[in-house]
Image (cartoon, rainbow, N blue to C red; front, side):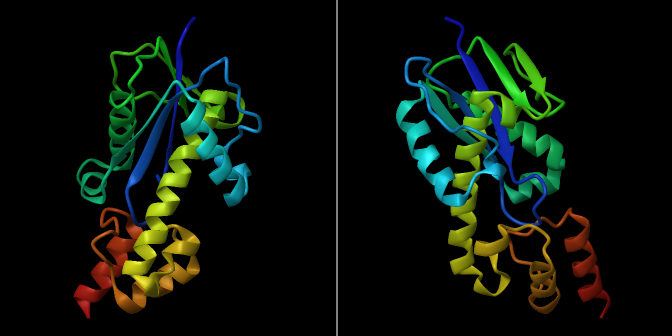
Length: 192
């Protein structure tokens, strides 16, 4: 039996928080109904599926790259780092790794990039779901630390509410200083 690991990340676009990747090897004898791109599922359904994935998968792992790493090496390289860390955390070694997207991180594994894979490849869908559930939970927790920013609602993305809070309160340690909106706001603060 060929073991396939699906890998996906969540959090490339936000202005705050880590980028989180997941790697999942599903058990063909324990199918999971309803897997799909995490963005196409309700939060409640994602939570239910994440629980089921963690229960039934042969192996799963999360990897992350922190804000400091994103700012130091850029978001693409940080995404690859999070993916590598997720793969390193697997208790079972896959024969093939399928990545959502058009590029694969450097790795010793045999890899295949699949654009839209989070909606078409069960293993990638599963990775998409557990990565999103994990990252969303982190941003909800950060909302309690920085309540004026609204992280529980927008999960760090550059919404009008988030940008207005940044202009009013400035950047926090969890904001990505290498991202243009944060850079611009920090530059405006310095110049005033």
